[in-house]
Length: 249
Image (cartoon, rainbow, N blue to C red; front, side):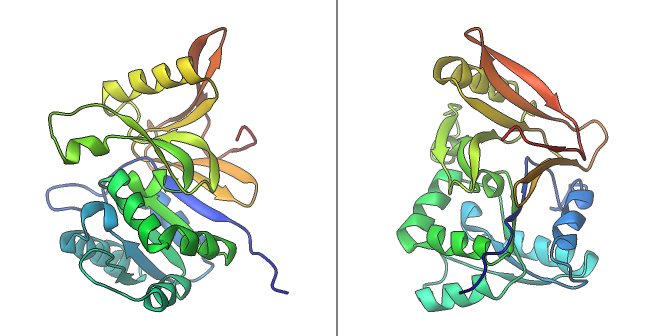
């Protein structure tokens, strides 16, 4: 009987990796993703479903993770290409890192569930493959996430919705925290009304999960992460220190 390997996840709240006209912002976090594999030149598989299988996204990842950081990069297209289940499994199970790109979280998760990608990724987690991603690619690993997916159909729709992720990390997450004021207001409203707690990640911060250990990573000194929780019928916010293990989740 095979032993289940340790869960390894790095979920990034936001930040750039070199799209045209932007500066690289998350390199310290991305180097930690690579470090978790224990390999100098690991294989990295981009899953850009949330960006509608963007070819530009693949080019950026190839240039950044490939040429700059030394990974062997590939992409899994689930919209452009009609792959068999076996072909999908071969790609996912034969990589060292899964990197899920940002975009339309709701659409991505619907496609994943229709194709059974959610089940395959959970099995990849048990195999010890490093699971990572930014924004939508962070939300997917949590039980739920706060998402702006409705704006992709109607740019004027600013409503944030609670979407259901794969549940590998059992807490609600809010990426891009403080990046836009409405995210904090919406998260506070949810916690005040429904209770529980949430992890709020600013751009250039990430949650690193190794087994049952949790740690906040930051690629900028002023980037922060918070625990948002309800007490005395009000929502409160507590800053989580970077690079220190904690057991709140």
